[in-house]
Image 1 (tube, one colour):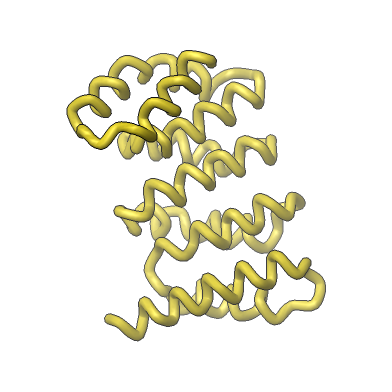
Image 2 (image 1 turned 90 degrees about the vertical axis):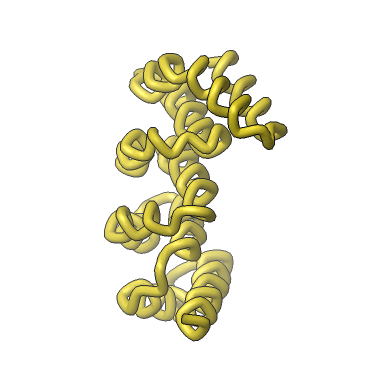
Length: 163
């Protein structure tokens, strides 16, 4: 796990795609093993590393991370998804129903906010705009969640208007 965490940390400073590809190759097996670990801490490191390493080939592992029993793992997978989807909005669009579910039903407030923030990198779909509007105006959700929903709702409306 330390090797994977160190590699992910090194990846943040790399702008050379060839060096990043070499680093991904070096840790690919460790990443797969950590994502399948029985220790939630190792799985969380693996999911976060996918984003830090910009490892788009491992998006199927992220999907599994979104379903993980551990809030730390779901949160790490969401952080990685948000990072990867900045350049590839199709990643968010592919898991939109799961993000909607996490944003509305996850028992962990931080996971709910991260799911909302991830939605900003996807397409401004009508169902997402409706969901965000509802969450922003809801009374049962916390102030931070309402603010995140309102912010992402506005960002997606601007994106839709720019089309």
